[in-house]
Amino acid sequence: MANPAQEEMMAAYFISDQQEVTDPETLKTYGAGVMDTLKKYGGKVIARDSEPEGVEGDWDPKRVIIVEFADKAGLKAWYGSPEYSKILNLRLASAKGNAMMVDGA
View (cartoon, rainbow, N blue to C red):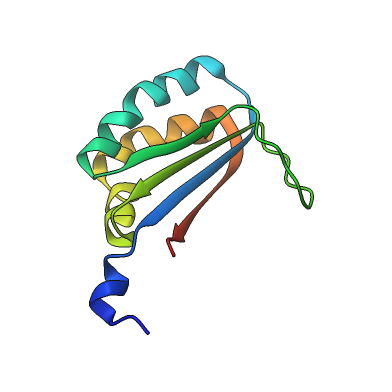
């Protein structure tokens, strides 16, 4: 069993799946700004796929993005940051999809 200090330092991941892009130009604006916010909070894109292959269930995203952070505290700090809050509405207005935060193993 890991001690609490080890658990706090476990990597965490932001996983986003895009089901439909409704406004490509606005999504490009979001994409241009999001990388600076990730860098500031220690996030690193580790996977980006515009042709993901579903193998089980009804999950059929058109694009999947996985961002790694050192820990969940860093991930939450990025997601709730003033910098990300300024551009989040661009993604929400330009694409339909889902996002989640996941702890690493």
